[in-house]
Structures are given as structure tokens and as C-alpha cells.
Image 1 (spheres, rainbow, N blue to C red):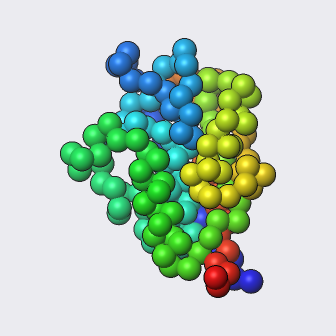
Image 2: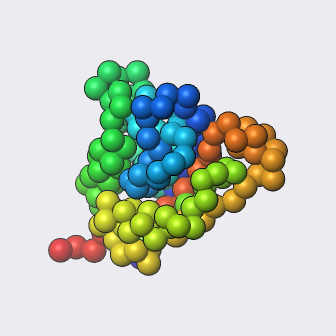
Image 3: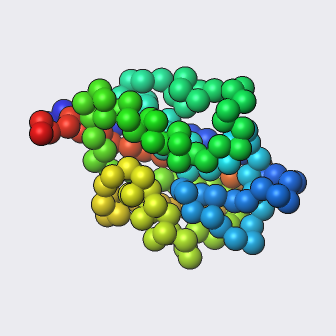
Length: 164
């Protein structure tokens, strides 16, 4: 069976705008500062979009959803994931698994891990067991260690879609 792997990385600073809300993997995380960005700044979904597109050889998130485009201001990143998944599936691929690493001092992911995995699985049309989410700190080093923002890395394995 033919397979391909893709990697995606996204980084966003925390926002000083109290009207924004932190969303990770399509799940609202309460009582934490939001991330700043043109859309909802869901770095888990952004990194996953890049990993999907990279594995399929279809560019990156900016190729499909430019950050300078006014229609994407404040957009729900689930729109980006759905668009990327449609492109990937249209080229004959299906998601085999996704592995996510969130890098930052906060928020603690443990209480939200199962909900984020379930959300990603639903959005990707796969089982929760095919999604893994983990988090690490940078031990006080760099912008993530100083609590100025978050980084996320995503790895996606695609396999050739089975004929219907």
C-alpha cells in the first residue's frame, strides 16, 4: 500500500484581546489566554492542515487560505481543515493517523486531550485511536517558555484510498 507522511508546524503569540477565545483542535479551552491570528488561530488545526497538504504534495495552508484574505478574518479553522481534507481525498488519499505535539508552558492539555482527539477524529473522519495529542514545555526557554505563545507540530500519515 502506498503511504506518504507530512509535517506541519504553526506558531502563534498569545493575544491581549480579551474578546478572543482559545481554541485548540476545535475545542474551546476556558480560562486561558487566546492566541492571536488572522483566523481563530487554532494552531493544532493549522499545523494539521499543513501536514495533510504536505503529505499529499499540495502546498500549505497559505496556498488555499491566505492570511491576507478578508473572508478568513476570525474564521473557524475547521473550515481550513475541511478544505484541505477535501483536496487530499480528491487526490486519492485517506488519513491513516495523526500525531500532534503542542509546545508551551500553558495550558495544561491533560484535561482536554480526549475531547481534542475526538474533535480531530470527527473532523478527519477517522477513529479517535488514530489521533494522538501530547504536550511539552520548553523548560522556560524561548518565547514558549516565557509564556508569550504556543507552537504546534503535526505529523500525518496518508495512505492510498481504497477503491469504493
